[in-house]
Length: 416
Image (cartoon, rainbow, N blue to C red; front, side, top):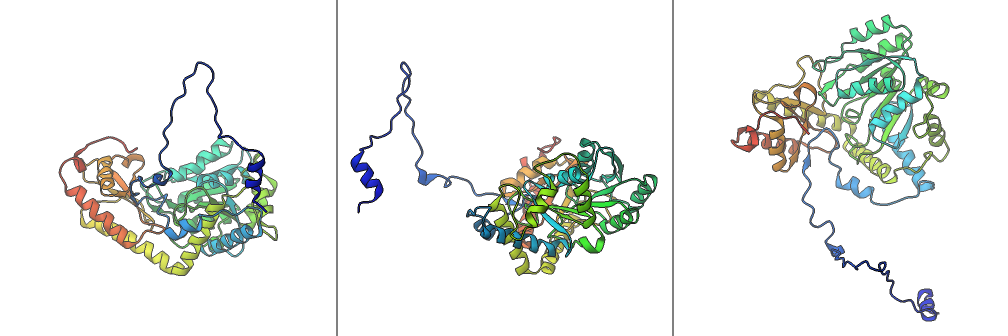
């Protein structure tokens, strides 16, 4: 028997498809590039020494290069394994872990819209750009925000949090960023959570640039909400967040919150709680596959070894800065994150010019924020980054800072 296509073609000859332009309109010849050349002309990507997104290992990239239907047992198994493996990094055996189809910012906003009603009071620790984001979302949805610890040059002072909770006994929650990516501060989450719980308030923590790079103890510290994302220590592409919820936070989401749909924790909880876990809508399947593979790699390296690698890389960067007479942003920061360092540059040296010089050497570092935007750079040392990558970056900075000309002489100007 002839193949169906051949049989059909034999009975019904098909002429080459041609669409003629309307009368009076000239046909314009179009020349298409050869398909075999697509992708070959792209320049080599720079080494990403930013605090996110970070380099995605080849193994993780390959794991995400296939498609599963999101309503199959195969994908349910992948999702379930991913959520279970995250428990080790979160430090929890009891929390519900929810996948959020969006970046870490979506996870942060989701926590606000699900747990609180307009008019509720929250205490917001605001010692950086991402700390302030909590407060901004809360105000957007009609909450009353009491800002504390607003100095971007310092760590959060637990005493300020305690005073705010005493002055506002009806406060529903305290928000804080564990690793403040904009400044490099590692804030005292255990003390803050303990104070909040004593006052009957929830503790909401942004762990986006911390989880997987430094220990986190959701259960032991008494945290109620912890948000993370795929593109930093989880070594995957951006676009997928996770939110861990305590039983108290889950109860708040069940009875309160503003109107919501896409970010509704209730529907996500029902979906992932099924015997065969799934998500309410179409999942970013390739990202889930990537995160699962990254979590397997973390398990193979050993979580304690991963934390030690991050600590050692941070120490190398800070030791280099000290040896070169360079300071670090944040004179009042008591504990610094092992995942990102903000380095102050010599007087008169523009941060934008330094970053451009490093970029010409094949390495991407990040702009600083706030008052240090023009005078500091941020170096990410997290996720798949290794000590060899750190050393290469520091050599490039040595070259730029010691070279005359365009690499360091441009003055002023903000970072893009």
